Amino acid sequence: MPLSIIVAMSENNVIGCGGELPWHISEDLQRFKKLTMGHYLVMGRKTWDSIGRPLPGRTSIVITRDAGYMAKGALVAEDLDDALELSQEDKEVFVVGGAQIYALALPRASRLYMTRVHIVAEGDTYFPELNWGDWSLVQDKGVVTTSDQGLEYSFLVYERELTWSPEASEGSRGAPGAR
Figure (cartoon, rainbow, N blue to C red):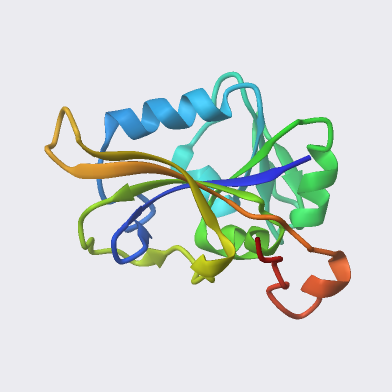
């Protein structure tokens, strides 16, 4: 099962501010819905809390260290391995945030769906650093301007071949393969 990351981030890798997105791009929300419909969504507790409800047509899995945590309408996992076990029937699982969960998933992800918002944003949550040389850009729709706020953004898709193994990620971020 491919593990995919889906994220919207600014030019300076900001993905959040105070538990919210620092922008509103209707087209990005529509793309998110289209890509993730019918799939499992893996997220951290803070992301779950910011969404506030299960998203229709998708199965949410919340990763938390709180063994007693209850997420009404979602599955709860103690770590990424548990989340992937719960979602093993899906043909593509989507990691939807936040920063800590992205960092856990990056060594195992083979696809990255990015909405690059062409601004330098103020924020308190950043997408983790990654080696862009390991990733190949496979789709770029070009720069578009939002219909409602005039923000410029690009829909990008990156892929990479993985040589991930559980042993490789023990105590490290893993060693992704090169193309």
